[in-house]
Image 1 (cartoon, rainbow, N blue to C red):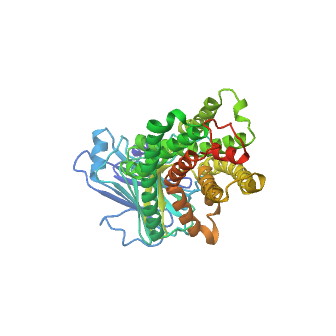
Image 2 (image 1 turned 180 degrees about the vertical axis):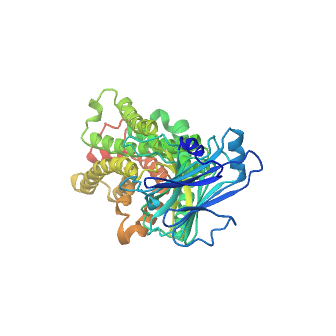
Image 3 (image 1 turned 45 degrees about the horizontal axis):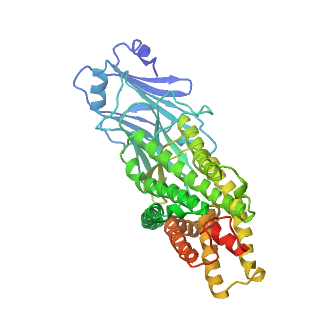
Length: 475
């Protein structure tokens, strides 16, 4: 692209010329020094390029790509000592197993100067498109940034994707390399389901956010001085979930600002809080297991080690992804052509490997501890003299509380496949968006139960029966 100026010298008096370098096709045009006008070109189905005089693509047939360059871009280029317009089409380009380029091609546009922040966008239209059910996103590449595998790092910054039934138009406010990235659809979820799930999530996260704040307020002002180790661990989970809900609720609004730095920041915060939430699920299960085995009191600086593990491990993962530039904006499409934008991890392989893999480890451990604990709770009436009426109520609250406390509800994400996909989406969304609210109820009810339990002591390791052990562990 940088050598296009050398070709201009061979054009003589011609103002525009077609290019063909191996299988790369394109054109180069001289820019007049004044009186700039809009320029429109098109690549035909065979890869040939031609100028469109009437600014319309209606006369084009087959699979075509039309490029509309506004006069504002030419004026900016001339002011920056640019003198050419070069458009090249690079075919047979590969990306990865999970994502691909539309038509396996990349388009590069060069004007010999820096052109950015255009108020009139450069429009690249792909006609007669067949997406084969995949999601399409217009992306740009600066020509240099690459990931660890050597693939270009594509960004949606400065490019909007507009789709109709038969075409895709990329509207970009700068010059660089452009491509439409195709990604597998997330189960082809309908627009109505997306709206319903979004509505449920907003209410649930908002409600959870409020009650998490109330729970932390109660803990700091009322019960902090007499809190057990289990309660302190629960409060750390409250903090992680509070940040998770807050960053999720503000994510889309920040994504719409089109500020790359802000998008990366909120994506990193959202990811960190999610991994921290997973880690504190693990810490909850670990503490419960150690408490049941009466091991926690034997560990020096127990709470300090728990807190360092709970907050540092997620930070290491997020810092590594930040250094690798893995956070960016993504578009979540529906089967009706609409899409929502959020700041997250565009690379599907990274998302699945890090997040699904991370939670899988947590899920296996927490589920194992959950089964062990429930078994012990069920067997308690047979192991000691316990009042049946209070025992039933206490055990029911404890089992339901542990279900949310250990993050078992997140396991529904593993069943989001096949005929169960929509049902699991709704179950997953309801349980997890309201999780902060459910945990507050559990925290409040547990406090009431313990307040009337004569067998309870403030020390989580002081037990008289196995029933007291379970209650003290998560009271």
